[in-house]
Length: 334
Image (cartoon, rainbow, N blue to C red; front, side):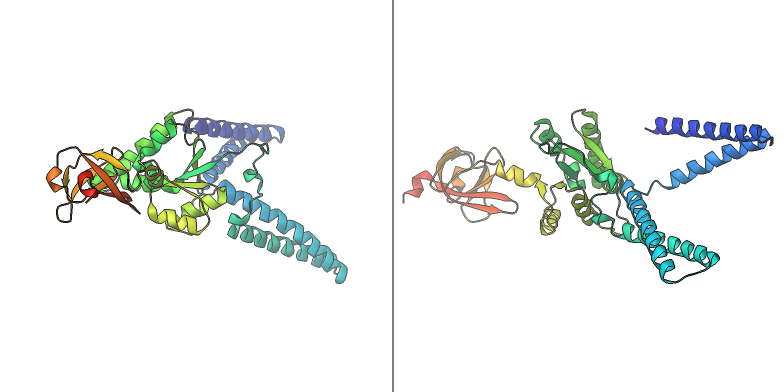
């Protein structure tokens, strides 16, 4: 991408220089000076283009839309005003210029201020078959660092266009450059996960440039971007999950998926487990299913390290996951 842009820029400067040379040759000017003027003109345009990196396509499209709307309104206003108030030619010209400038500015300002509501701007119109639906999923920082997204994508369980906002990349880079060794390791892991996803040709990963500079909270930016793209948010952050749902944005939470895939047991069911440690309460023992679900067994401290059959007494669903309570089978009939 960088090499392509460099080639385009060099070609553009050469073309500007050649145009300057041609202008000097046709008009009998100094070819050297006109060629230099063409070169400087091309260089200034490239500097202007480099300075516009922070401007998103959506923002630019909104500004153009507002400009066109402002020009149309100024035209109608001028015609109506001149029909009501006869003015001489000079006053008409001045009034027309002022109306054009005023409504052009107002149109661009209002369009930029409300660009989130412009859903029909040309770059965001999706031309596709009515029976074809492409899901878009926005990745947040936590789900990238978590790493389980790689395994989920490899199973083809999630087939969607993956969007990584530029502000999430900046947050990952900040974490990777942190002075704290643990944070630095997590940040580098997140960047490596993104590199792995990008390396897989069948994973559709794109970087979105929209930054929402009026907001400094990454979670708020994610929600706004998801609304704009009509996308879902992929996360493991519980707080972001709740904030998104309150604002009508659908969320894919890996932790909720993991909990849904855990073993399902019902009260009264008999299973065989192996307690491995003491519980918090007196005479309790703790065991785990293969999926990590905690099983608290009453009156089983003496069975630690042994395989025993237990009867499920209750199942408790918490925010952290599912907890199962049981008691030894030979005591459940007492």
